[in-house]
Image (cartoon, rainbow, N blue to C red; front, side):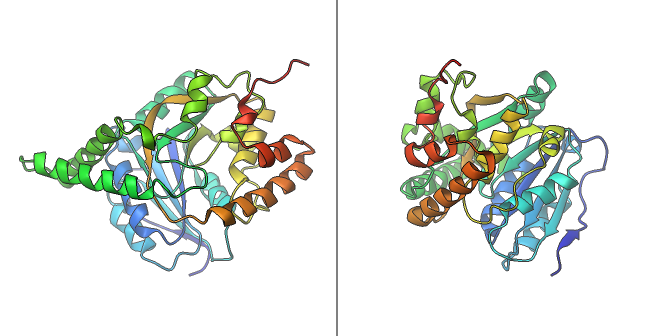
Length: 316
């Protein structure tokens, strides 16, 4: 399949408040769950669009997108598989976006039913870029995978058992994820790995040395015009790690405030990781970014990690 857009159906085209951009690659089952959670949102479906950008998948990703195309406004783009091109995929979505606000999600991120409503309200009040915490997020480790999978399976079974009244498919989808979020609220071991450090800071990044160091695109949002003003994502980054913190760095350098939200309104579904490979890739990309920006903080990020970079900046 050649690069380009595949026209799909969806909600009537009108004024769009939010554009949700999802890069994906050979994870059609996780993508179906992400799209299901978007379909179950309590925000008027005429107020948001979903843009899936396929980085060369050979699985059933196109079929999954077709299945959801008559349920919400969904556009599907395909780019040939020339290696890891998440930055390019997000830029394709950004160029197509019609919403005033863009929400970047990873495939396999499940949103609470009111997540997009929260995004909509926040950006009516503030132009700050939003960093959202997700249950199950860990930077490199896969140790939580089995715990998250077991908890989600159990909550889905419990939701089905409680669901005595006949419901439509959308209502069943919403009930399943409500049960999952209820179960996760008591699972402290599955909190986002950034949780404790942000709690210590009272979620206030205004004095942090490098708040962009936790701008991870598993679930973030900003104004579309701000994203376009900085030129989108750096497509020179063609391996895992760095394209999102670079994006956050340039937003902050352009005067956009970065805000870490306190609410958990997303779940990061488990998937296989190779921690050693990811660390090597991330360090290479941070070396590139240090040279690109002439900023030693990227080297510090590689040596000391993001937690150290959330320390208060020294006064000039």
